[in-house]
Image 1 (cartoon, helix red, strand yellow):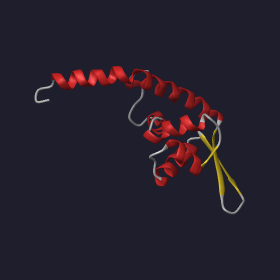
Image 2 (image 1 turned 135 degrees about the vertical axis):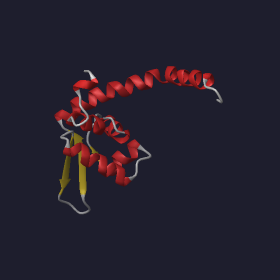
Image 3 (image 1 turned 180 degrees about the horizontal axis):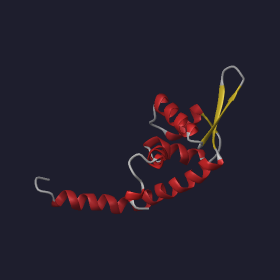
Length: 121
């Protein structure tokens, strides 16, 4: 794919942004393991506020990646899982996340080399 094939107004850019957002990647990673309640998902991800997790889940649900099932009980019980489309997206995002984890030491070394060569560093 060439960048020129993906103009700024192309919907795929926004979809890609949702999929690869800080919390989107982590939601995909956790939900690949199965169905989670909101509090379980938040605990698994760690460091995400309730508001950000709710927004991320809503965005991914709107895009068709996440299925939200509300059970009619008191207190409310809501389960989140990946749709078929979500599993496909998660596998691809997961491959990128895996690459980043595997090559993190090389990236960090490149940063150190770059920073050391910069004037005033």
